[in-house]
Structures are given as C-alpha cells and as structure tokens.
Length: 91
Image (tube, rainbow, N blue to C red; front, side):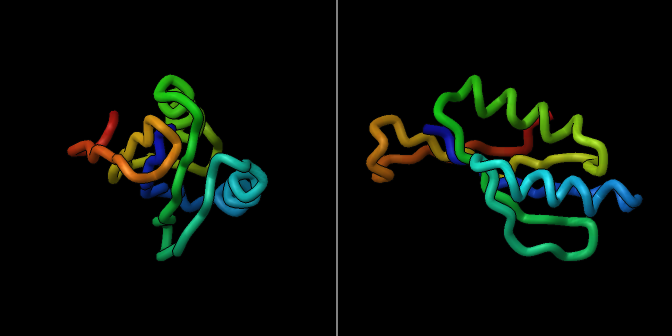
C-alpha cells in the first residue's frame, strides 16, 4: 500500500479553491497545512500503479500547477511497520 507525502502547488487563479474542495471529497487524499499556494497532502492508494495514476490525475486538475512527491512509503503487508523512502520528486 503506497503512501505518498506530497506538496501541491496551486496555480493561484479562481480554480484553486475549487480543486481543494474536490480533493477534500477524495478518500485517497488528506490535505494538510496550506501556506500561500503550497498545500501539504498525503495520498494513500492500494497499489503502486494506482498511486502513479493518482499523481498524474492530480497534476491535470484545473487549479493545480504542479505536484511534488516528497516521499513514498510502501507498506507491503498492510501493517505499517515496513516502509521505504524514495529520493527526489516525480516528474
């Protein structure tokens, strides 16, 4: 089960407020602190493929300029005990 720590960068226009409302309704996404156009978020998916697709979907949403992947932890057995961290941001 991949869990990604994200930094969402909003594009600053009128669509940014609406995209945050949309993300609040998605069970896979938990929004954190917002500072200016930057919003911390956690993305939790069932598979690595779903995680990658969700990241692409986030980047295509109106109101989002870019999504940085800060880290990805993969909990293979669902216990939350083992995790691996990735380096860098996905593009």
